[in-house]
Image (cartoon, rainbow, N blue to C red; front, side):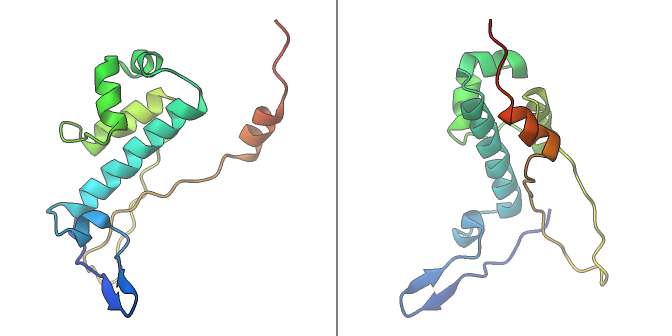
Length: 132
């Protein structure tokens, strides 16, 4: 992953960030840190959206509840992006990695793009649940 240079700029009202708080703070591997932050944010969002406990989510992901808690609190040091992809997949989130060559072969950014649910998923969400 390339390290994005700090593109924050000063204005009369304050500093406008680059879009990557880790780069703005001057941390090494800022792109990777931002990527992981977005992935664990999605994990926490899915757990919340599905109204699951951390223990239930952990059972699906193959993690103890304490590790799920650490992830939901942004502790990603011991996790690779690949492992976070697999954890999301176990929670029912499709992860797609797209590779795009830069025309001039200049260093490129790594980004996470969240897509909206497909039409069939939206229709499924709108369906009433069957009576027990």
